[in-house]
Amino acid sequence: MEFSQEEEHNKISLTKFESMLKTNNILFFDSNEFENIIHHYLNNGKVALAKKAIKLGLDQHPTSTNLKLFKIEIFVFENELEKANDLLDQLHLIEPSNEEIYIQKANILSKEDKHDEAINVLQKALDLADDTSDLHSIIGMEYLFLDRFDLARDSFMRCLEQNPEDYASLYNIIYCFDFLNETEEAISFLTKYLDKNPYCEVAWHQLGRQYFEQKDFEKALSAFDFAIISDDTFVGAYIEKGKVLEKLKEYNEAIENYTITLSLEDPTSFALLRIGHCHEKLGNNELAQNYFYQTVHEDPLLDKGWIAITKFYSKQGNYQKALYYINKAINIDSENVLYWKLYAKINHRLNFLEEAERGHKRAIELGNYELETWLMRADLLKQLGEPEAATLNLIQAAEFYPENAEVEFRLAGLYFQLFEQEKASYHLKNAMRFDAEHIIILEELFPQVYESLLVKSVIKR
Image 1: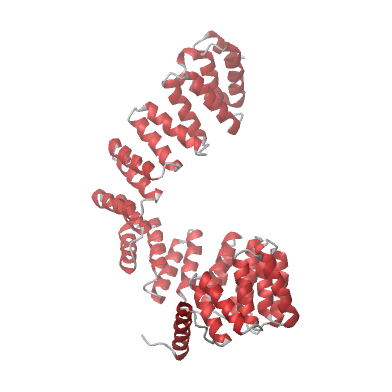
Image 2: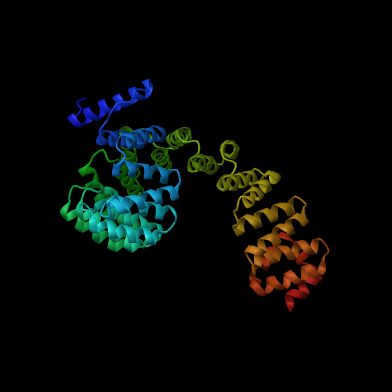
């Protein structure tokens, strides 16, 4: 590999600097050499070495503004904002037209969450700069912090006007359109951009995503094909094309596209999972099972992988194997609500009622407050002979679902069983008022209560 003359010079300067640090012999470098050395260390995350280079640089070139700006950058990085501001004020008095001083000032204001002020400072820098592309990008990011997506989008558009290959700005523009739910506007923008840049794979990919959002799968497919024509190694385009083909029930073609991604880069758990789902839809159960295994092997923390393999066995009625795999998933991530919900359902299928109740309870503890979870747990507690615990569970459910007949009928039945007639009558009257048709709950879950004279008298009122 050949280095340019400038790269070779920088490499020599770096070697010379590191040799100096080892020997403690002070050697002379011009200020540009120090800037390149510092830049190299900062880019590689070697802050301690960058600080040494800044100190030695300023010892040899005490008036260098650029070296002082690097020092300010370190102050900001280490959150010593007061020191950074003091040094910036000194530099501003010397060089009031230096745009970098304004950029650093804006950086400090941004760190202090003063984004409006940061934008005002950056606007001043725009008047001083020859190349304003980077400044518009920074302003765009500040608008993003303020959730001003329309203004952020406009700033990134100015970047793209100056550099049509600034794909970071292109992505940010579409992100803003997405957040503003302006799909049609995004399509119009991308279409105009592609008129001028017809071989931009990123734009075709983003256009395909917009059509996919509109469920216009044929146009999405065409856009992803153009992305692949523009760059046949573009993994994202193959993935998105595969998703479209799945929607069109073209599972074999979807598998082909997902498989291409496996040869272009290291296998991704997402591609393996989608291939597994496609084989499952095609009835290729052995292949589906194999790809689901590969998915969880590739990424043991991907919940969708474990859920897929668990549901695969559940659909086949093999609940023992489904339980085995959901237990493995829980051992890896015991805080995953989806795992506990599946754990509860599988144990219920196996008639392991205590474990099923434990699964619903854990899901609730982890923040799953769906009505079904509360009701299933209450019914299990009733079956397990724990009516007091069931009522407590339902009272908690009522806080999230007030005026819910399903909750109230269950509470009425439980209180009748506990011989707390006053509470039972209260909840029964509430239930009848909320939705009398749900009386079937009482009839199915509490048949003896349903047939009692007291209940009959309440129902007739």
